[in-house]
Length: 109
Image 1 (cartoon, rainbow, N blue to C red):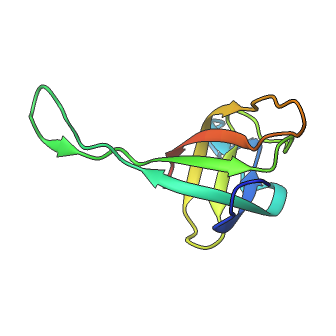
Image 2 (tube, helix red, strand yellow):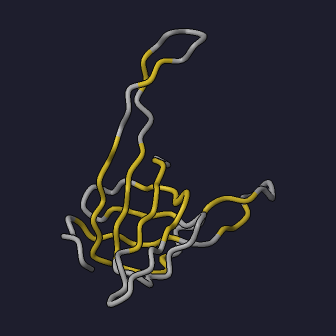
């Protein structure tokens, strides 16, 4: 990883069915204890209907290039216990080295 890691994460992957037969996320760890840079970003917005200010919880994840992270995976921050859903993964290309993988995250719990 080129950037500075500020936490360790586990990648959660997979689904199962609840007693009613509806899909639910598993807590199956696909990749355990990986160093990563996880930065929360927030932008204060107001809804048009109510004018109530709110701050949606988003984050940006940076990891070693080539790590097997996919859209739809979940990330658990081992330091805080927060769980994030992976919205989009970008693997930039580099000429002399593999740049860090970048993923946009949304807060799950």
